[in-house]
Image 1 (tube, rainbow, N blue to C red):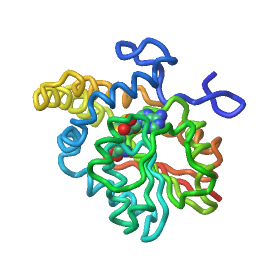
Image 2 (tube, rainbow, N blue to C red):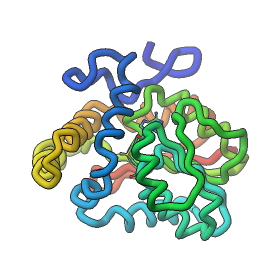
Image 3 (tube, helix red, strand yellow):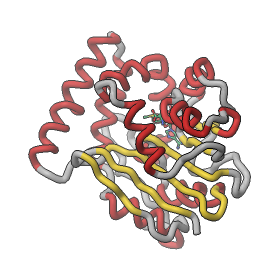
Length: 251
Ligand SMILES: C[S@@+](CC[C@H](N)C(=O)[O-])C[C@H]1O[C@@H](n2cnc3c(N)ncnc32)[C@H](O)[C@@H]1O
């Protein structure tokens, strides 16, 4: 089954052969991949975003309406790159909670950020109903096993009127931008990561990163999953034919 709710889950991409063999192995594979690459993640991110990462994350949060005093749950917090910008805006480090599947990513986040950090998965969040004014997730949509279960959880932990903001890299629509992205993200970045770290896992991470972008469902399917998850009027904004923000409010 491919569609959500009574129609079944919506998976962000099919099984990616060469990385894991079956859907049942997906979560273990993703957790292992991020555990193996956690010490290198921030360096990779600097290389990959050409230094614009913090600025871009902050701008997206502000544009979505994040402000002082709001309570944030940052799902798939990773090493804390998005959460750090959220704390800078809200001004309350205890009011930003990070959740992640990978214990090694959480350990790096813990070494840099003094915020509550919890190990857990997006599809079944270990948090109470209505605890968040804002739910964010940066660059992890492609890694969950079911978009519908994930968005239902986001909806559940948001208070009425709360906002969800998802940042993602999307498969470019135009042929030229796709060719440039495929060359840069699919070849140059994995090569540079291998060169910079001498680590096979980081090269695999970046190859996997591009495979999931190439094979990800279309924005319409993501918006549909958000609607099934409970959000009434989700929207997707695209910049440079590559960077996507999905935004919705809980009515
Ligand atoms: C590409 S990193 C993004 C980290 C951070 N959000 C950022 O903006 O840099 C993806 C993160 O998603 C986490 N992750 C993957 N699948 C997850 C899931 N199902 N639930 C929670 N976290 C997950 C990984 O462990 C990893 O830390």
